[in-house]
Length: 187
Image 1: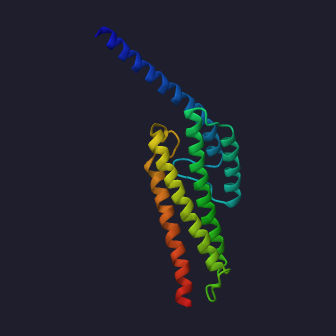
Image 2 (image 1 turned 180 degrees about the vertical axis):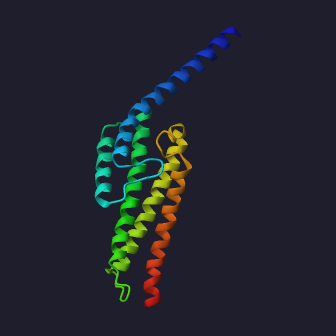
Image 3 (image 1 turned 60 degrees about the vertical axis):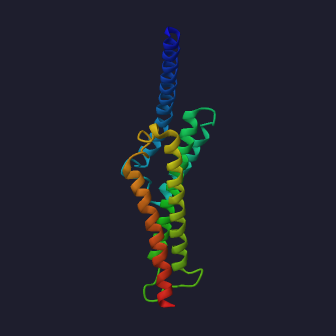
């Protein structure tokens, strides 16, 4: 009985040591991503930069950071997944910005509803925003099922991040439908 208790205590201590090792490693790795996020104003309230140029630079820095991690440790795998979520969010935001630019160029008196016109180009970007938002949602769900304990530290575990992703997906879908509906009504 005494040996069983000692054996059980050793297992508990070993498990705690592994958890502390993984979480400490994660915090150190995540500090690099925090620096990039701070540089671009990304925090718990801002999930991505707002201009195409800043989105491109942010994505470039994320990809550079991603190259620094291997698949050998749990902390590295977690970081790669966080970066993949962030890149999907960048793609979502980039497509919204591009859709907005196209919408701004639509002639309200005579919208070009041809397949290569501004209305369908904007609808294309809106659809891409929705698809990338859904990809980010799936990646977030996968991350939380594997690494839930790191979600809050990574600024992707709070309800605001998930809710924002949900709204982005719905907005992309609604924008695409509205733009296509405009041409249907005029057609």
